[in-house]
Image 1 (spheres, rainbow, N blue to C red):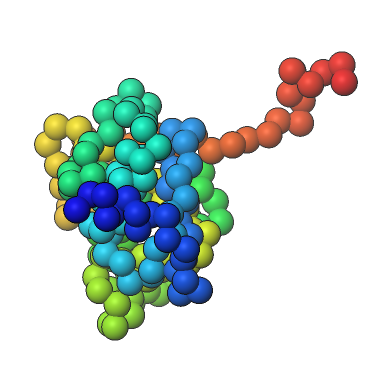
Image 2: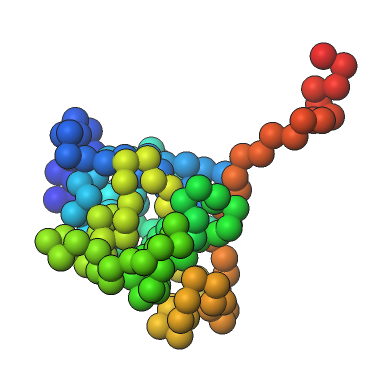
Length: 174
């Protein structure tokens, strides 16, 4: 069954697919999925893609097997235009009254889409998601009431964003 899933990674996407950028530390992985694909399936696809490229660790964390998709957590940007503001889990984003642009958000998004999908989280083609591997006990996201709430014992998303300094010391003298 895993061989069939690996073959599905090589299929050409249809015009209905969206490309999502998954970031962890300094790594970025691109996956093309249907907007209605549940996050649980996307987690397995991400692990499958890492396995297909023979990636065993990311940021000193062991990569789980593709059948352990529940060991992966996703984070969507608090502000899609400013990733430096951090990430929150899609489950937590569905519970908050405002969307990532500060406007009103419908809980569960479009009713035709399954809960816990890129479409229900408001993700479009080219959207960025953070990912991390669960460490120890699962985190409880239900206690967070709004965007700015801090979840106790949250290890953070550890996403390194590229930055460009005008006075980069390596380029002095050029």
